[in-house]
Image (cartoon, rainbow, N blue to C red; front, side, top):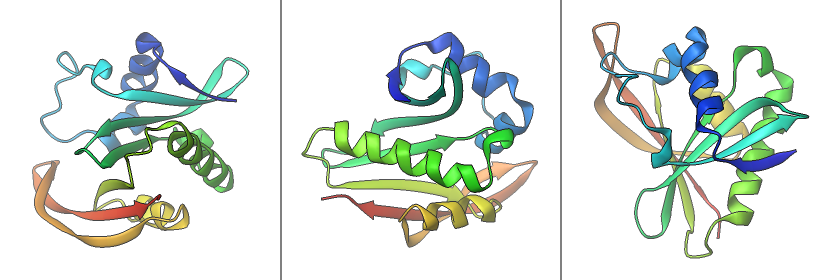
Length: 149
């Protein structure tokens, strides 16, 4: 089942307590004490009450949404494409019709995430140079987009 959630404690627990997942979504200066999940809209993919993945959505501008997919390692692999497509389809169906595009920025060190994004219909559009710091090294991020209307 897919549904929007405002269970911010569950969101924080899922993202901050999973060291592997948190390590992938954070940069060197992420301050967990200041991180506020209320700044995004959250959609969850649930198996009964168990949240298998989260999608955070926020406005980039008046016609573009920015999304971040959070799938714990145990739910990745073949089932992640069903989960990812379902979450994105839900967000597209339920967002305001003024939005015509979704953007994502993925650090180049996460080639598996770039491959996943391509499989869920995102296209490479450019490079955000020197925009992500991880373990003391600076990396580019791939800019990917998906036109939805």
